[in-house]
Amino acid sequence: MDYTLHENGWTVIVEDDIRDLSSSDILNVAKLLSEQTVVVFNKQIDISPENQLEIAHIIGDVMKQRNKSRSNPINLIDGIIRVTGKKNDKGEPGLFGHTSALDWHANQASNKNRDPIVWMYGAEGMEGSRTSFINMANVYENLPDDFKKEIKNIKCFFGYEAGKYSTTPYFRDHVNTESLFDLVMTVASGKTSLYYPFLQVFGMDQIDEDKFKSIHNRLVEYILDEQHSYHHNWLDGQILLSDQWLSLHKRWEFDKMEERVLHRIAINYKNVYESYP
Image (cartoon, rainbow, N blue to C red; front, side):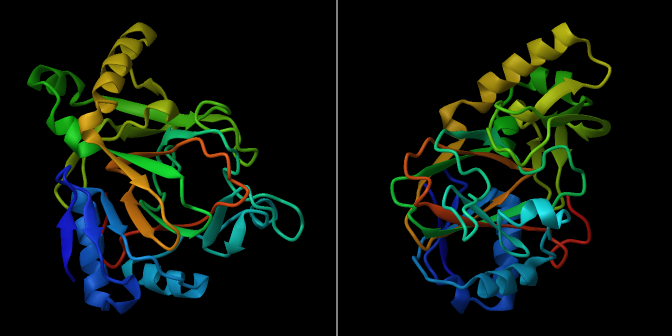
């Protein structure tokens, strides 16, 4: 498998048809992902949902929907979510079907057992839409040493508040204070990164509100520095993978969400690492 790095130095660009890669190649893609945070397959292909799942299972287990009654409108098939405003045969849109921006976030930020790879396949109507990514390992690497020392042992808790990054009706408001996450973490690939999806953060353990706000505002300033970003302008048939411990992503406002259909799969690294992160 041949690949190049984007001019930002970390986004992996693959021109091969993913269906032509061996199982060994697919596992190497996953290792690259855990080191570089984003892998883009540029080739435009028409790939079935079943074939997508087959390839995903080479890497690890695929997240299945637990609440079948809620997930039916957003499921394409079990394991693949429809991200779209396009209606199904019951007249129901998929997940995140709003035309407004789906702001910066990580998938299931407050769930320690979440599957850390998000697979996105641009099925139809993608041209003109944009998804952006922030490399949080790069953000951490570029922090001043004194700030790294200050935040080294901080633990955070996360949740969801409607309207903060999405207006989807499928999520419930919650704050999970039971699960604490290291602000600075090292994943199985050896990459050290911030874990700070800032629109999903609701506090820091044993840190008062004023101090939390001060650290938070400073972190957000570094995170949003353009040097850490990759902007993907979609074409139909492209596949993009991102690591949810090492990156944040954002879908920008798009007026044609009732035509745009993206397939999303959440995958773990079971066949790549014994444990992850």
